[in-house]
Length: 342
Image 1 (cartoon, helix red, strand yellow):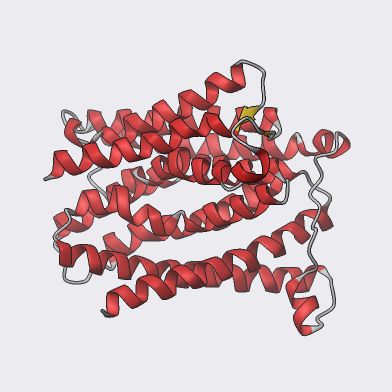
Image 2 (image 1 turned 180 degrees about the horizontal axis):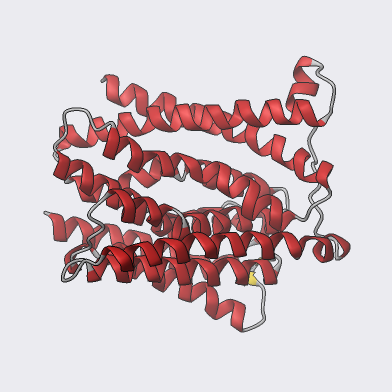
């Protein structure tokens, strides 16, 4: 009962914290005069992706009574699982949230160059990390591990620089970040609307995301343990439901306001963070091994990303109906995982 209450309370307050954080970063992006791509792909994406960065650390260094093997399984799964959730269920929920308003043929129009850059960097980093995990089943070389870690970190640095460099041109083309709603601290508590107030609200929102995501994780892990769900399946499929909730909420809020670039960039930017930097923790602090029978989530992720590339390559805008496949891929992955692990 306690675990279920933690799950519910955590979920509700993650929504509240995401709204506070999102509102602050919109004002920050507007104040700095940067594009929606930078705001979504870097500022918001990194902030909302930090809960899933905390999960493997909690599992590995604060696992409590769980065995070292179980903590290692949860740690690896919590790193490999989130991109599956974002590339399938998250983008599907984002699209379906405007289904009634736009229809199945309705268009979703994120800024194309930033989206392409996000998906390319994610695909490169995630593929490199997964290949290393497979190779660890047969051969482990610390020098190779260090080289891969350096490549992943350097790649993320290059990604950030390229995204920021593209900002000025995008602002001129009408993709500047604009905050529609008044800053919450100003509206409700009459704080002055300045960069300090924006920073304070962002910190409050971020702290809330981390704290209540941790509460939600405790609730879902406790409930799942009582049901006898395997550790790796828990970390790949169920924990991302909690850790990816901020991205889902932010993207749904933004796309319903017509901010398609912010909505999509929040998801794909978080994927870049997860594909390039989260594996670094796995390589350094876990066995970073992925047996073939546990690869379904990775394969599904690549299929989902490839599907997004198909529509980018056509030079057309996405339609709401295109994301039906992404949602179906998540359900299929879940069903296969349940069959494999039972």
